[in-house]
Image 1 (cartoon, helix red, strand yellow):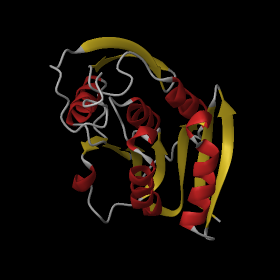
Image 2 (cartoon, one colour; image 1 turned 90 degrees about the vertical axis):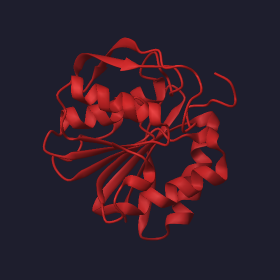
Image 3 (tube, one colour; image 1 turned 30 degrees about the vertical axis):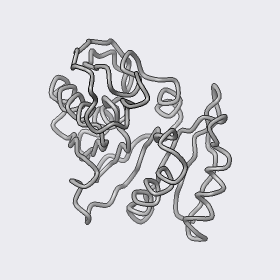
Image 4 (cartoon, rainbow, N blue to C red; image 1 turned 45 degrees about the vertical axis):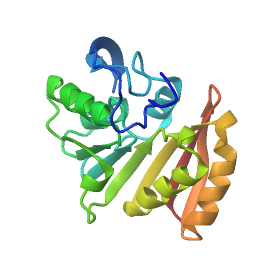
Length: 203
């Protein structure tokens, strides 16, 4: 993939060539569709695997957010775990959102809403946020992204982010604690295979 067509490109330039991949989501082996022009099109990437294995069970109800959803492994897992919740799969990549919709439909998951960031109503608040955030968008863009969404947790809601240790997980943890202020706790809850999982919750 060229530098001009990264997974955070709104409209990938390469033609859509759908591929079917077998993956394990929420303890089930399922078939999903992916394509080039999205993040990790051939498998569930290692960081997301760590996040899915170590984050606590998803809330049974409410609005749940997969921020930077790609083709949907986190959003689909949340929807499988919590069929009575509404799962928002948010990304800037239109191809990724189309894949999430295809995969949710194929799995019979009517509780998934795939949306561009600006299409999520401002009054929606999230019982949990899960994300393998796009670190490579650059520090300023990443900080803007996180400060847009992390404060939209419900009272008592949490967020779980997976970040590569060599991509600045520890410095991001310190920055989040400072940026979100004294009412918020940011702690490392897991460390595996070169990744950190950071939990954000009310103090």
